[in-house]
Image (cartoon, one colour):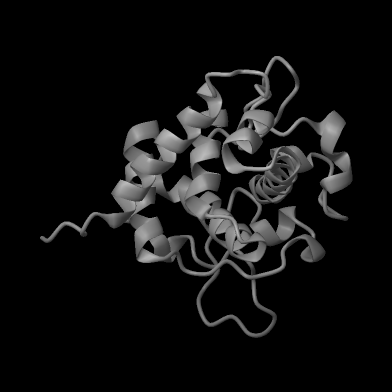
Length: 196
């Protein structure tokens, strides 16, 4: 299964340490993201999201440990903004294949391929110098952009087409691709855990 216990304390708590500190080469979420940009401490993933994470790890060939913070952010932002976390994860899969450093020819960056020139106004205060390359901030901004697109276009399919830069495509290829990936994620999330 996953080594979730090694990844759990993303945000350090104020107070005495009960466990010895592990040497860390990369900064924690708390060090990368200013406190006002993170509204909730990452919580344990739901069992269905853990099953979806396993599917994503195999499909996209990404280490499960690297996916945990992405899934936690999708779960937290999805709950806060009332957007299905599996939709967020499906968009990430289509847009960046879970590469937080992805950049398109049009300048879109990060997991959800947000274009900084159009969406700087949505970046939370104190998000750092490269907010679109920070997975948590990118998901926060990307979901905000998605919500606006859905509202402006009047529905999920049209909103997805707008989000993907293909609003004029009568075949709705981008939306179909995202929704097909979301359906695969839903199937994986419903699967019963393997018995050993």
